[in-house]
Figure (tube, rainbow, N blue to C red):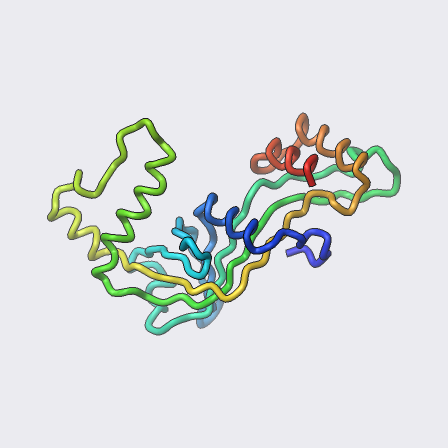
Length: 204
């Protein structure tokens, strides 16, 4: 996270809305020798106080989850390189603009019997985005195959203690310089969703 406070003006409501819409992040906990990291989809609760996810039993985080662990979920959004030439002013340096939200809290394993409900809720959330396609549901699977799948994954919940977001959109530049950079990013930017990032820069 960039330390400049001008990039941290988004409130918890905006940061949580971004995390809820993205619904995919990098889960990290402290391991014995190094951090343990896993890329996972998740469900953020309506009140933003917890998130649900599942891990395959062979995942190192799942193996380490014998008791609750301090955890971070890092959610990335659009990003792009910014050339100093794009501002239209002198004495600038290269940088990278991006959006990222960090959710910190405590990760715990849930009882195995909660896995089916979590899978149903998670698939319903994502399948709804594919309408008018008929939503996929777990009842389309043979019960014996579904039971086997349920035994191979564990449901988890992370209680969220803090929310922090960085929206680095060149807010430390003049409006004109930021608009120039956004125009060039539209045409020449590279990264993830650089055109969306350019649009956000214009409205920053």
